[in-house]
Length: 396
Image (tube, rainbow, N blue to C red; front, side, top):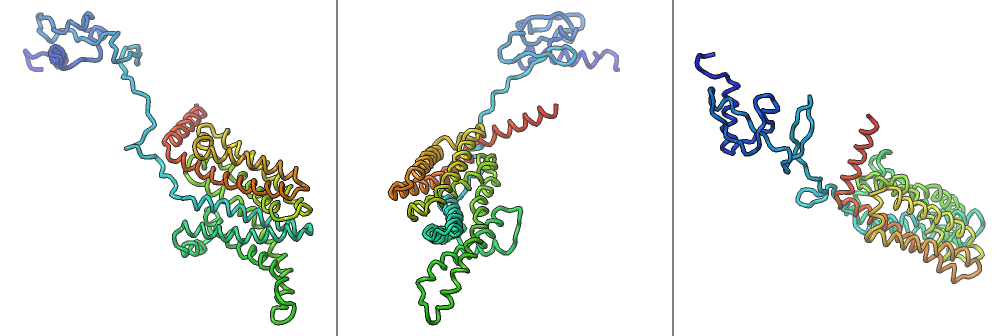
């Protein structure tokens, strides 16, 4: 060390004291607590003169009751300061959602309904075929063909180009619900179509070129009808798996309930077709389908509105809430009318109409609820934080 020069520590303390005297610097710890001199108040900012000059002046810290900061105990019992951080607000950059909302439009919600209607109608037709109810079988087969045709139209319309549906058949990917659904539609469509065409066999002439076709169509229709009914459960539920596989919060967390809701909705819509088209004497299987479908649909809808916590809100509020409430009321009214109208053709028809309308309201309600959850950032942020807290609690 050069003779006549103060130690580095004293020079640094003197420099800091001069900054504090000028109001430029306010240290976080007082030298009194560090053992460098007596504690003084906030007004004593000018260092006293002494034998060694300003280097021996005490360093002044903030008062204990200073409002902008909060004191805490640090390592070794020494005091310190901690700035208060404001609570986080659930906003995003420039007010944009954290997740990109689905670009699907109303045609996808209609696709969900028509696919379920086709599946339920095939099951209804199989029930009529196995129990010897021709009116029920005929209504189910014709409705299934019309519904699957509309379903394919809505899907291709959303894709934009028909070739995109064809390109999905280049590969079969079991882990992709979209790929599996494409193959399900491909297997179901021809079977449902052949079963429906077989209903027109009595219209063909008994003699001539079409006589062999008239004889072969009914047995082929029976096989095709049972094949379509075998694929129908997958057709009714794969759309629920498809929605649950997305990143949309209220769809993703409802993965146990969505297939159940869609299966119940498909059964209820198929029962509605039977109650509308078949006479009361042949509508027994339709009534039983209505009860089973309503039980599944009401249980699933109640579960998604209560089990998911914060993510249940989109299913209770706004357009989705109104549609799902209307769906529950229509489903209950349809089941009551189906059971009470065993001998009333008018009441059975009204019950069938209510069940079909309930299926539409339920599918559109689920669709709108998921879209609403993707648009609000808190439905993404809060569940993530809750999962992190549970994970950390489990590791402690």
